[in-house]
Length: 510
Image (cartoon, rainbow, N blue to C red; front, side, top):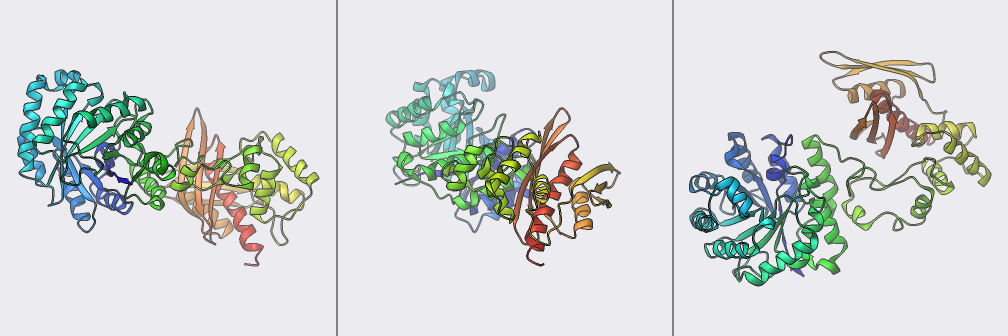
């Protein structure tokens, strides 16, 4: 099986995206997480863009000194920048020089001819090879370049000593058939490219592919390039990158793992790390996965319709894709809605440990759920309904629900007040809404619930919380709530977790 290299450029291309810059203290830890996930090369940044980035790149080199993962840094194509940037790298480092190759970019950026560009590229690559172990040279906007000129450019820079040539679909222009054709053209026309060794041997340079996602095809184009014979792919975690981003590492990896018969390649990536890696980077970037993001979105393994619920109850293979299970980024969930069926109700009831009930009762429960008008019938609502039908285990009290909720913020904290169905009122405060809500929950329930992930989305005064929590018996609970009051909706997510705690702990006599 052919081995390809994986270069992750989240810390460079992702870092360059508007509003995504990682601070100096964060970059080394994220680089280690990438190395532990099996990435071959971590592109640490653009050292000369600022002093902070220069220092952060040096920190990444130091952080990865005991890993086999190599570090790359990028610079502009001039001798002065190359000399300064090379000082960041160690004896395994890769210097990535970037130069445009399309006529549009040559005119707009450099105002030089094709001939002059090749002279510049050869000069800079030749100079860099005397300073660093490996040189990767980019062909920016390659998918808009004259294919004949692109071949000429590749031949020239490889002869000058480039270890890797990076073909960039800079504006996300290509489709998979076009990308495959371009890779095969370069393979056939440029004798200096290696043959299936990722540029790691002495037989030639590596052909690398760097795809942007402006039209939503970055992953598809990257996979097409792999199938056509490229040696290296350049990806980012969750597709973080300029404008609409890049090819998502976890999505490319999951497809390679799921379809070895199609792509016929191996990587050093470790599947079990992909979900945690995605969560870590999104947390560092301060962004949400969103509900519909492939593999990592919180709806990726959620089933609300009766047909799907029945299928998943019988076998996860029916509606839980292998690619999603490989990534393992989000928990599998069945939620109750007006689209649900009796299989979903019985599954949730069994998960919660409720008493068994007849088919007639199942139909009555289902009818009440359908008439509720709720987008999602929450755990608390279901337990309240179960209590009315005497389905709760002995010694488990009816669920607590919220009747009133308010919050206000001071300069230093958030204060929340909640009135419960038991008549109790609790007031709590914290540095954030999340901490204040957790304190309120602990006050009235005694349960030390921990937030693992909280994601808030909304528009036009409506909000949607997705929350993953760990309850005292170490169970991971994932719930979501809709509403017009974000604080109350978050509190109600916690009430769902409290209801599950009551069932799990009190029914066991704890």
